[in-house]
Image 1 (cartoon, rainbow, N blue to C red):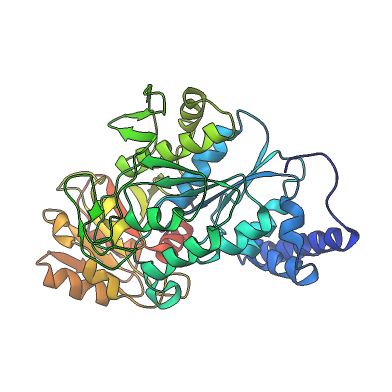
Image 2: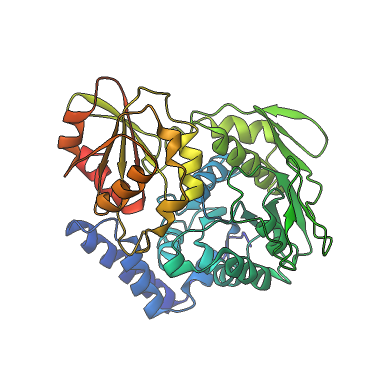
Length: 412
């Protein structure tokens, strides 16, 4: 918990120094931020370093399939109203990256930490968080992460007995089942556009009934809990029934949902909804997501979509036809090497848009678009794609490493 005593032993200080040196060398060699390799070296020298770094912080962990980087950023902005914050803002969300981030926050009061879904239980053990935000679970990187039901079970077992306040999305049955092992849960009605991973009851395996926004299982009685916070249009409803307006520069309903969960988390730390939501307006982009950049005389809006749920949300916020759309998909280790998820995405939502396809797996995507009866062209690179796009702003949608490739190409 927050305090002023130095929790670092001489060994821990050596580990931090070595990690920073390795990270700096990685940056100098042009190999990225160096946060992951620096964290790995530091943890090798002191396996307990993450716990030591978190000891003087009031921490909140944020985990989900989609939206965790943005929500982490929104929470961090809100908590800065109450004191200095350290956060892994660029999304290095496994223990090594988290350790690197916290090593740079010795003067901070709060730690706002994005956590990869597979590592949540372990990071929670190490950091003793005051609050954990659980947003959603859907299929993603099945070759690495496994099925969503398995992830939910890992969360449920890992969080049982946790002293943390759990802020959880009551509209996602998998999240509710995972959070229900905890003694102190604050439920937020944040919505769930993608429902295809939540038709069977995570508790008993029965068929879920989903009338409107409600859900329940007739076989075992597992059902949607009553929320104390809710997203309602352009407002957040707090536990007292007060409606607070959401003003974001980030687009789409999904980000309003992220703001609702972030306001509930901020309240756990004593930051009122009005203050929290006003501070969230400062966020214009998150690690390049939603940025509009100029390249080759064209305006490109960069959008990240890594899995079926993410693509569905992204399609809902792009400009209408005839806005041109560039799609780029890779399948490197950071993306997951299995591209079968492409067949779960409803690409008919792009009907009427001029579509250009690129990326390492452009042919996989081309086959999927062909089956969806979409008109498209396949390109080797971004420069060629721009030549084929009609005038106007271009929506660029890419999965993780394809997104990073595009950012480097446009100098973002």
